[in-house]
Length: 145
Image (cartoon, rainbow, N blue to C red; front, side, top):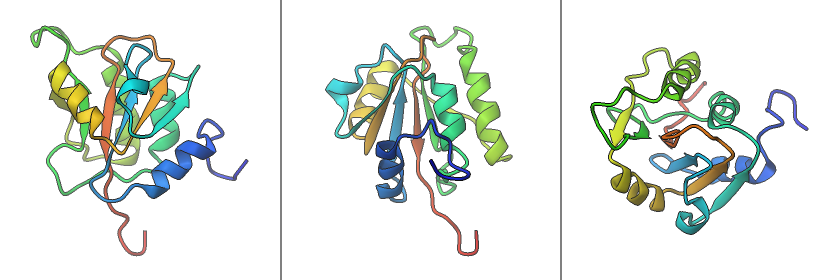
């Protein structure tokens, strides 16, 4: 255990987060996401929802402020469909760390799979909500932060 670090973050996931550099991406997949078959590196967080994982990661994980939208979500099949309810929870979690969060980049399902295959790592969760997948693009830590 470490002070100030959520016990939900496994040593494996902390290592992955530390190894990542500016512009690297990490996908947190819901329970239906084909994480094992897509991942270059896989961190299992079975039994935990995506929101809980995000809540644990965000205080430690800088998002890329050099791109328009550094957080990507999987667009439901019908683009006119209301956003999945879990997205509003994700936005609240992210805004706690970044008040100027510009919102999500919505990515079509198969394009999202392709982007996930190119991620530095994929986190496999036990999330049961549909379209609950998210990709984070890592930013930099400013000197003195």
